[in-house]
Image (cartoon, rainbow over all chains, first blue to last red; front, side, top):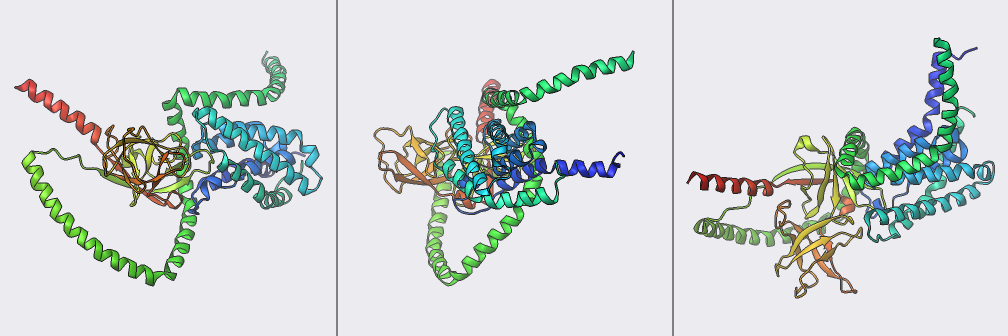
Length: 171
Length: 295
């Protein structure tokens, strides 16, 4: 029996959840919070989302989606267009290829893996910024940001897990 | 004929799709590098495209940033309530001091008017201000910029100075219809012609993503001391002269740095200075030509 139109619409809506979440997180991480010293070292929420979905539901987060989310982040944050897009495509690819290592194992392992990727992503972003600007840039804010992102990962990951269990169709 | 045509298209489409999936990664990586190169080479085109996207998202960010602003205001109010007595006392003393300064300023203004009249002095063009709210605070570790909720339709143009009550914050790097990007003076790409207020030595304030930008191209014999006030020089005609920027702090390694007056992490509202310096100079030059021709 073919699914009805409303069922198909419902499925479609559920399937775009990771992508829509990515856009929402880009917006949430770009608006000002007026906390002294926060902005340059704010946790990279988008990186957490892309990593989480690439590990758990790569079918719902295509490379093109990761690219477009990164490009939106570039445009709204003011980084060179393509920079975050490149980083997120790389992160997605690595996370998907290592997905089997993480799925069904302890959360500590996933957290450890994310930490490595967060610092690697910062390093790539920093390298690209240096080459793009043809000037040395202090990498410290980036390292703080990576540490902050890693530290806050469990909270966001918990939220994503909840969404995955309650909202997403099973693969 | 038609169905066969369709099936041959299908037969072609499947391998193309597989090929696309296989090469999507490579293609996207190349596209990302392509975009970065393009934004270096074709600055205006990429800026225009970015502005359109920012314009689309600006109203959403405007709405999203309101609650954060309210919370921040409440916290600030609570903190200020605690110190309201001492603050009041401080303000009373400051008011007394400022009244004396006001008297001095009035006297000097009258004297200045009289002297300018004697010299037939052409005053600087008057600047217009546009107020804007900060809706985007860069979450990037390697850029220092902001988005504001005013754009070309409010009179904002690329290059205009952005100030707060304390001093210079940055300049408009790109203006969309209803939003604009502000490049802060601390960003690595920021260069502002400034001068040391007391010695009138010229220099360029060069950002390096740190909280304290450098003073570059300072004359070798310049006598700069810690605490000297740095103001915009107005050279280049884009910024009005005399905008306060910050105070000199001497770093240990002989680099002269400036502590900006603006507190960048607390920016909620800014003013954009529409300074007609350049166009006024050009217009007056044309007028002179016209007059000369007429004579």
